Image (cartoon, rainbow, N blue to C red; front, side, top):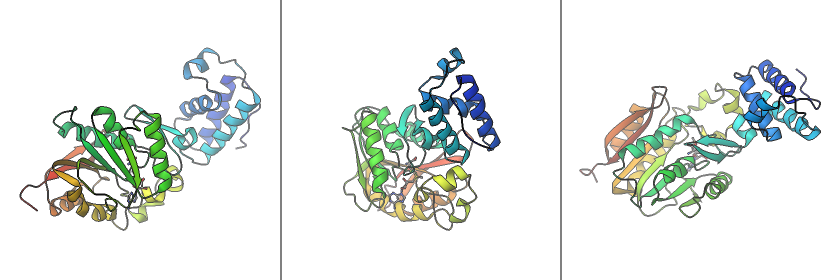
Amino acid sequence: MTVGLTPHSVEAAIRWAQMALGSAGIDGARAEARLLLRHATGLSAERQVAAPDRCLDDQQASSLTEAVKRRTRGEPMAQILGRREFWSLDFIVTPDTLDPRPDSETVIAAALARLDSRDRPYQILDLGTGTGCLLLALLSELPAATGVGVDIAPETVRIARLNAAQLGFADRARFIVGDWTAALSGQFDVVLCNPPYVRTVDIDGLSREVALYEPRRALDGGDDGLAAYRALIPGLRHRLSETGLTVLEVGAGQADAVSGLLEKAGFAELLRTADLGGIERCVSAIPDKNSD
Ligand SMILES: C[S@@+](CC[C@H](N)C(=O)[O-])C[C@H]1O[C@@H](n2cnc3c(N)ncnc32)[C@H](O)[C@@H]1O
């Protein structure tokens, strides 16, 4: 369908955007139309409802047109809006960062459930930090904690730093470029990681939002989806204090294999936590005191 909007009322613009998005096969087209209108005009949902006859100016109409075009091509909402909420915090999202998923909040819940106290000065490590969402969400719950986020991609680390600054954690979070634990020394109390875990052959079959627009290095887990776990788990124990805790996100059906890798690397007391869809979404573990 031809995409283009002449200056029009709020309600007409929403209907036009809804139609364009619906024709492109996008579910929840009306809700998305409202979000894109807000992005283009700054008008909150309440003001859109309260003033349906208000006219968009030329710039707002062309900004909405552009946003709708991008969305109909399959670009994820988070990249168009440039933001995504995670753990009730607002994160900057770009094509260089994975769009934080609600399922990953399971990692935060699992970590909090196993920590004795929220007031200790824990040192946290987040491997494959992306937007920094895991580290910064956990810091938001642990007021005395500090942390380091690591990512292989400098452009991703730049966004994580911006997120730390805009969320007020710049004094407690540091971000570095590195290959998993290779650039690190010292020990941490908590190590979080949401590695790429999609089998290479499955990537092209994912939704176009993911397959075409998310960074491949954030998705690609190699032939069986477990390549990153194999690469990073052996180095984990050296970076974890004796009483430390690690929480790893896993893909659907990967909990057994990742648990096996953790046990082999000297971890014990493994616990699995399911996401809201009932899928085992993370495995947490502590160092096995009987293994060296
Ligand atoms: C699945 S994303 C997770 C991003 C973020 N932690 C989240 O939960 O939304 C995986 C991240 O790992 C990073 N990554 C991939 N290979 C890496 C490596 N060898 N060392 C460090 N980070 C890596 C990617 O750049 C990507 O940001």
